[in-house]
Image (cartoon, rainbow, N blue to C red; front, top):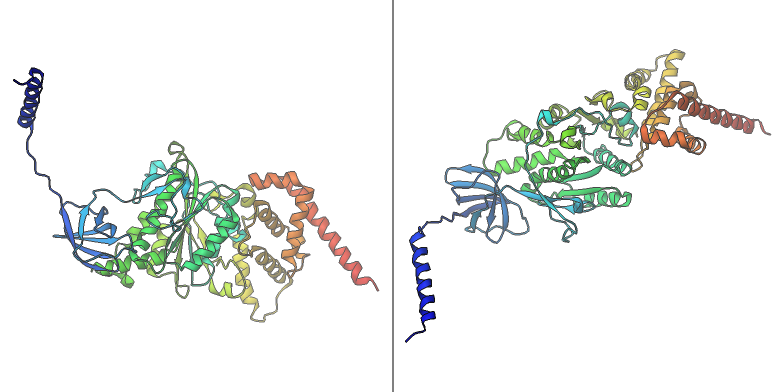
Length: 515
């Protein structure tokens, strides 16, 4: 006879099984899978996947993730995101039903990353990371604030003539080899003293060029990161790079920080999208670019802004770089970007060849934010400089005709030449606020400026800066911090400039009279 306790347990288990089977309703679970039918340069044609959505991630067997770019009847178009793992025809594909994200956080600073957020050195991130969606909507109008705080570039020609504010989008245009990247890198180096987070996006650049920029940023210190999609990588990664970098930047912006992002360059990004579109058999438009290239760039650049105080007050300043051919600003991509951004800095090949670096063309460059993003010292000293400098350039062309000039005209030419010398900036050595203010003050004091020979002007100004720092340390520190020039400060600095020039002139005259 069986144990009564065992019989009771068996009856209880049998009752539980009976109740569970009565309550269970059989369901059919569909596992949607597709197959790769064609693959070319990372662009995939997939048959199946009826429930996948546009811009979603899918998983390709033995090849990693891919991004859906288009939907057709009975087919899905996607681009592979892992160029190191080739896609096989017939490989199984499954939908992940999620949008692409990238890791973001303090741990990305000081590193070189690919557009998927992985470190190029293969090492894992040391700190806590958050996932940020790559494609996000731009802030609404009521979430934005007016740009008013300057972002100093350390380049006098920019800070004085075409100021950039935090949250602005300023386009850098120029032919090949006119110093566009050098200007953007100098701006990043200047942020070492301001605490602004800098993100450099290399789109279609050579590995050696990115290595040089990495070395410069590493030596300078500061807070920076580099997102790269190299020239020899798939067009899908080159297309994704600026969006991924912007998502990483927005992590800092949402925490109330200021970020500078450099897209170098969006002409290469447009070429990558043209490659993808032609492989996807989409109709070409003007200059063979697809018609939605304007939407892609505007969707990207609209994410750069200054957030209102309710959103934390963070800012994302964008410096997109674009290539021109023979200084033709009316080409398709430059005109698109000019219409989206808040101004453009145009670099001239002729000025670059003449030794004027940065080769900023004062006639075609503009900042639509203007004096709203300038501090008091720059606004007062550089108010007339733009028009006077542009007038000098026209007058200089006229003087080359060999016409006899009046003394007043010769004086304007001498002042203009010295002002042009002061606007030059050596690559890799951005100026501080006081260094720029003193140069502007010297341009404003024309009599003092004319006493200094143009040949030795740069060395003389460096000595004058050092003299002011030793004699007026409190004034210099305040100007560096606040960029405010009071009347007393102006008189004290001018007195030192006049005394130094008078003493040096007397020593030169005494040396000439000595036997």
